Image (tube, rainbow, N blue to C red; front, side, top):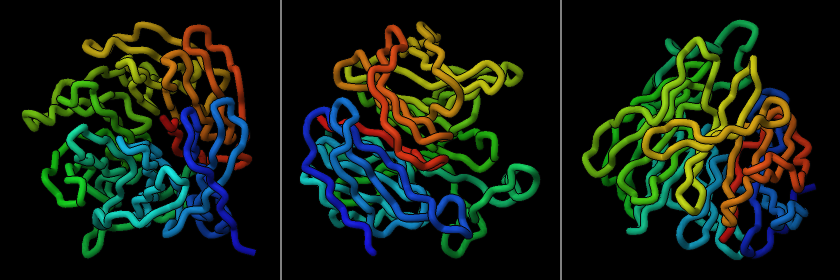
Amino acid sequence: MSNESDLKAFENGDILVGATILNNPDDDHAGDGRIIQYDHDLNLKGTLWTQHTTHLVGGLKFDKGNNLWAFDSQNYSVIKVAPTGEQIDQIDFGARSFSNACFSNSGDVYLGEHLVGDESNNKALEGPRKLGTVLPFMPDTDRYGDGNLYNFSSDGALKETYETETHGGMPGFLGVTASAFDPDESKIVYISELGNRIFQYDIINKQQMNDLITYEPDSGNLVIAISYAPNGDFYSIKANFREGFALCQHDPKSGEIIKEKVLPGPGWATLCLSSDNETAVIGNFFNGQIGKFVIETGEITATAETNVERSLAGIAESS
């Protein structure tokens, strides 16, 4: 029996979540791609079963026209869903592991390349945390990727390649895994998930900037998600497997942590700041739960279950 999509037209405040059904017994990152639609209070509204995807669907973000973008970085798919709730034909941006996007007011698209390096820097080929999926090499190469940012015009023409610094994260191969446009569009802030740095790249002068924040390696602090709120406040999720996970508000200039709220347990890895500038919708990668948090108090006002572990890889709010 085929999966039937029933995604509704996007309404203000809808929450869209990438949560693939991992039903491929040979690959723990693969299965039926799925985007779930909730209302403002996390009541279920509909589901889109994505076309042209094979692995985890994530990196959800709305562009200026309220089209929803999402990514399958392992089969090089860039997904676009119209405000009507229908998946529409998307530009082919090329065979790279894109997993996140930023959109400029001029219509340009900035795509982040999820993977970097080759088998020599993959710390998860063997051992107790052996990767349960095969990372693809780019066509005619023996490399996963270059971990760069790419500037495309609205019609898909490559305008600029920014050779960004990356960290690799705990597994060693993670490049630009999440990115966010500074409100004045002068820089892109980005991370290599499970690394200890929040990077900044000056897209005006086309140069790497000093990190927004760098955690000491022995602190155990890692960055797992970043996002700007609509009012320009900047947040991250700090992961520390000894001390717990926390939602942090940073000074957007110095990177200093202004406020920090400890989250209930580990695994909170996907972050979306709501348009009210008072709440955050956060997804738990470990157990598939979504929670709506009051930023000031840490109170959870609503929850939803995607009922799939290690799959929740993107959250976005419709405006």
